[in-house]
Image (cartoon, rainbow, N blue to C red; front, side):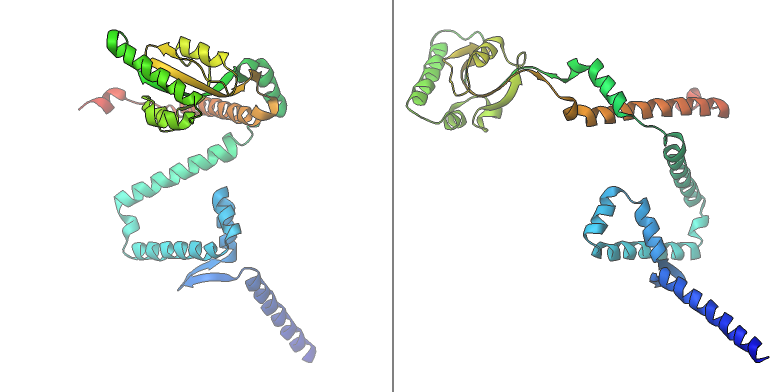
Length: 292
């Protein structure tokens, strides 16, 4: 009899210990009446979260408290809504169903339909070899300019004054004046003037022909004479030159991989939707939709 009692006590103790251990393994992190939020709930939530949120929570654990508070607030409000039978309103039920369908379809597409999409490095290499011309970067120069506007067709004294002003810019530069400062004060190209005349890097074909020929004939550090275009008179300073080249595979492999993945995803999705729509017998009555 005594041995049976001891066995019963031992079994009860084991059950109590297992329950205590389980509670410690999955402790309650927050509660509001019968609403409990456990450690496992937080872990599950984080596992579903986007990488940016995961990183934020790792770098600042204090944010976990704010996240749990926001979720508990949401649960408390939702409980109040259910008590008021708000979830039984037709409009709310429709919206809930729409949200469920939206989440369900998105999850199904990602986890089942599109989950096996993979682009290998060999695929990326083949694309690169077949499309090397797409990664060709033509010769470029980096230049600044000072523009003295002379509208196309202007003749006589007005044109003469414009040229004289451009000649004055060259004289100031010969005396050691900063090209950037002269451009800011005198250039009549408003976009580049506020940047000291900076035009950035450009390839052939982007600028008026006389401007282009002058810029590409200069070496870095050289300044042109007066260059005339339909916009007026320019003085050009070339600061740098980049020789033509083809971008290396290592430079572009990530962008190619993303492009191929996007294209494959789009193709797979269109194929699935076409087949699923046919099997479902989809019909859209455009005339009824558009009729008043």
